[in-house]
Image 1 (cartoon, rainbow, N blue to C red):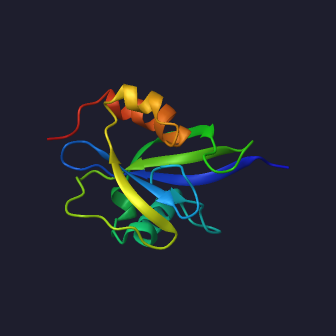
Image 2 (image 1 turned 90 degrees about the vertical axis):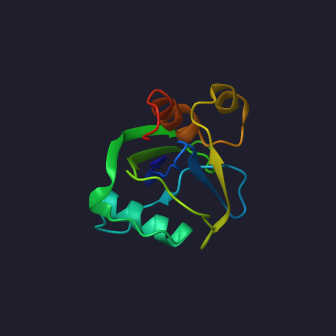
Length: 142
């Protein structure tokens, strides 16, 4: 049995550099918006589609900035690993963001707060162990 789950994750930041996280209904873990690609769908198209479904935000897939292909423990599937194409949206997200579809809640997270990243067990490993440390090393865009 293949224990790898292929996904796309999108990093959305506000003007201060905080990262938007989502929590799916019926789960406790906070993660970047995104999800599994549909058959024949590119990682960029998947990311834009998932953000639209989960948050109602319209992103142009061609403008997503690739951050890399990473692996981390799956947040909601024990003994599984996510293989994630991770992209960043180049512009700050402005205004309130509201959950939609299977998303129950949204919150902002400071990728520069290493103490929080280590202490909060509800942060998905892909975000806490892989994405946030990479973002925290680079100051947010003005």
